View (cartoon, rainbow, N blue to C red):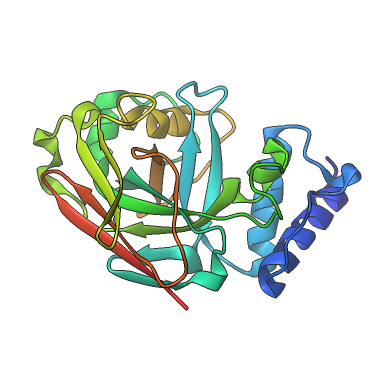
Length: 251
């Protein structure tokens, strides 16, 4: 895509966020054909909104094919969190494991080993809020959703987990609840087995942003599946050996 089309697609998505309106799908001439197009639209949308990108959601374990969604500073929340339900009307929730970068990652850091990854990151439990600027989240084309920050609505994070070195994450027990209602319980629920693998693939990816500053958070995908709640609900995610995170969706 040329710069003018990237800007036009980003302007449409930014306006949708600002005005609280939904988009059926991106116009044919503004549709991203590749993930590189979608990533460029994300970056331009953040620029139009005058928002910093402080975190990323990632998917995939192959550095050549990993994809990501930028997470904006205003949608990066500390536990316990509150968020107006009207800001994220899809109200999808997932319990996840994220990683906090303890140092800058530069263009040349694309041959990191898993041992180096462990040394330069801290484990951070998280709740991702899934949302969409499209009228139908499921019907919107996948690449359109990728351009829309890969359907990220917000991310709630807890404090770093220093005792996580003793945790076997491929068998980690995780729960997700809405008040007294259990939404999901899982043991070793990550699709990659080890949640470090998507984050490491992102850092190794030739097409990732060249500079990732210390403090950037990388969240790695659901452990509990995507669940839906309602305005006024309070969601709790529990991580064995760590504790709980909470977000309330206010009306």
